[in-house]
Amino acid sequence: MSTPAPHSLEAERAVLGSVMLDNTTIDELAHLPAEAFYAERHRVLWSTINRLNTTGSSVDLVTLTDDLRVKGNLERVGSAPYLMGLLDATPTAAYVHDYARTVLQHHERRRLIHLCLLTAKNAGGADPIDAILETHEAELTNLSRYQALERGPNDYHREALDLITGANAATTGFVDLDQVLGGGLVRGGYNVIAARPSMGKSALLRRVLTHRASRGETCSLFSIDQGGGDVYALEAAMRARTPLFWYRPDRRGRIRAGSEHRARLEAELDHLRDVWSERVRIHDSRAELNSILAQARADIRDGSTIIAIDHAQSIMVDGKSDETNVVSRVSRSLKAVCREYNVTLVLLSQLGRALESRDDKRPRLSDLRQSGAIEEDANSVLFLFRDDYYQALIDPRYAPTNIAEVIVAKNKLGPVPQIAKLTWRPEYAAFEDMATVAQQHRAETAN
Image 1 (tube, rainbow, N blue to C red):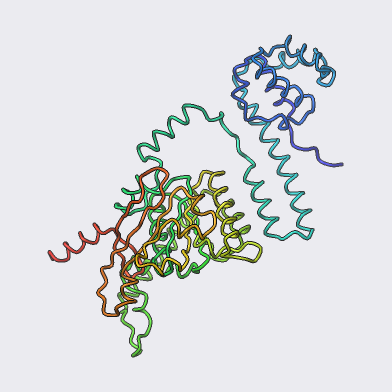
Image 2: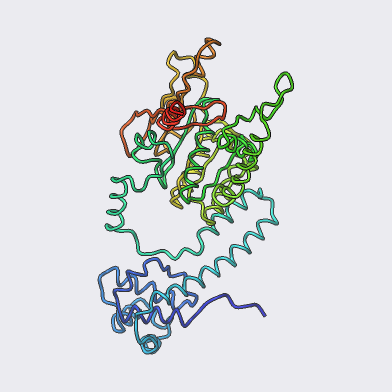
């Protein structure tokens, strides 16, 4: 004998009786679909109640019985005595939300059973495993969502105030950059950091994620170009203030790092392992879009509020990457996840070499148009530019300024273009606030 599907007829009857007692609760249960009811008669009743409520009619024993009779549905629900029994069994509507939650939870259990059976069936077929996993993860994430009232003026008013005051911004950890962004990155939005190779995109992203993690947020980094060990090593070297090349033999076979430096670096690695294991989740073995989307949804369910991708052109779709239509699909898919779950997306993007044929090699939005729909989809676009890089190619004796520019070329919440200047520390492959570096220099000089 098969096990009955999860349900509670008592809770379903209590919901129906409660809304007949107090019609004001009908709108409060707008999130509860008719298919959440297990019994067919209850699905018919709930649909009828909502239709009457939408037309402005009161919902009571008389109006409900009359409408069901006119529509030919009265016998389907068990006739008028059954409706009277719903009222008699429900003394108060005070607990209607608890009843509705029970109904919805049983509905979600039935959906989960159906999803698992469907996934098992698909897994035995010929569809790509990544596609099966993506579908499963997407449906799984949609479960267990007891949604509140539909958003209204009060919600929009609060969101507008947050936008105006910058309360919804995710600070980057760089004072000047946060100022030109109007508080920080767009929280719950799609943020792009784009540049030519060797400008420091990954380093900038790493510092932003470290800062957000220090504020208690959980971040997921899909590092396609760099392995997780590389990310850890670079961050630890920056924290320990010792360049990684110090730990490797130079041309003469000498190693500059002493035991003190090594101890400091290992201590920072231990610290990162402890902190990042909770706050910065690194995925370095996923390059297919479907696999990334599935893992991102799983991380979001587990608390991630920031999804970072390094970088767009390395993501594979059907075995292809770095083509305009492929990058466009990547961009649209990631934006959909961002909007669906209201998480912050930070996407790194590589710029084409066409800009290097110009005298002024500062990136422009037109340079990003070669990357499919990224420019159109993004809420904000930041370009990273270091003139030192190009000057050193022209003159090997050039003395670097170590100044980097972050050009805010698109910002739906602020004026553009805006430029923030950061200090580039090439020995650590890291960025720092110019004000912080100046303060440290003054302190060192004073000592």
